[in-house]
Amino acid sequence: MKMIYALIAALLIQSTVFAQVLTSDEIKRMADELNKHPRKTALMNAISNNNINSLAISNANKGQVNNFINHQVESKGISNQKNSGRCWLFTGLNVLRAQVIQKYKLSEFQFSQNYLFFYDQLEKANLFYNSMIETAFKPMEDREVEWLLKNPIGDGGQWTGVVDLVTKYGLVPSEAMPETYHSENTSVLNNLLSRKLRADGLMLRKMAQGKIAREMVYELKNKKLTEVYQILAFSLGEPPSEFTWEFKDNAGKISEPRVFTPQEFFKEVVQINFDDYVMLMNDPGKEMGKLYEIKYDRHTQEGRNWKYINLPADEIKKYAVASILANEGLYFSCDVGKQLDSEKGFLDLNNYDYNSLFGLNFDMTKQQRIETYESGSTHGMALMGVNLTPDNKPDKWLLENSWGNKGNNGFLIMTDSWFNEYMFRLVVSKKYVDEKTLKILEQEAIVLPPWDPMFLMDQ
Image (cartoon, helix red, strand yellow):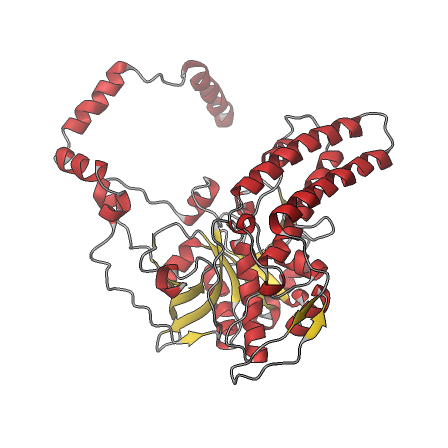
């Protein structure tokens, strides 16, 4: 009976309460409240004439964090993604290149990010065209169709893309396919490709709805994909089918030159099995100890939606420490823009004190930030170091970035408390993960829609 009364009360409230209009009286009340503020003039003068971060930076926190890291993975050379969203690609290749540098005792080495970026864009175009055909009979206002048209292509991604692309197309050193203006400045190319894909997608959708043989629809799709290939080749260069590689080691010894195909280079020089790796995630809004996957979270048609295990941050840290102590870096992604002192290259929860500046409370839990899209995985970096206290607890972590020499000589240092709040993805070798956690991979994955906050691609 109480439930019935509660339902009736709720219906009555809904029928009598309307969204409030912002009236002139209400605005006057707000202005009066502002004029009562004891620091109105000082704050208005300061904030209106300065960068908010410059005013909110915590003086008390300066000097509280140093840049000492007592365990660091061996790697040499800083990369720079320039004005592009390819951090996921740089991060994955930076983890792989560290292994090549160690294996061949190199002073420095870089893979060609442009090579894989070419195929990333071509494969994403193919995925979009196929999706337009597959969803042709869904209405335009269907949420999946709407999502596809809003996100036809982009330069973001994550570890899934590294796995799909390297497995299929192999790898080449940077000199085999150097960067171009449009690989380093992707916005114009992204906009043009998005426009073309949307126009072509509508055409394919209309054809698929008609009484036309499926083969003819896909024949047109392939013609459109050929046009995309031409745009990419003109903008990024054409990928090599083979190349010659020689290197100089730390002792100055030069190797014999050898011809490789990209697939041979990956299999013989890198020698890594991606099946030996697992992605871990920390999303407090979802049940821990469960396996998840996100629809469309792949970079090739035949690729797999990457599955991840949701775990508490402290468990993820254990595996990260074990990997670093074994001299193996990890793919790591986070919300890098939160509490970043970009000048010093520090990520710390106490860098900026907005609450004290405005006299307001801006605090949210990690779960609240994720659910409201306030926070998400915005950037990928290679986790390459940890500072352990005398009782073997991590208090700082070292991230190899892809912003050139910005920050701490190309690196960022994050405190352990920042790790808890803004870390999202971490990819680790299964040999550092306990059997109980690996058993979770045998679960049937909970499939999440592409508009789930966790889909946010690293930029």
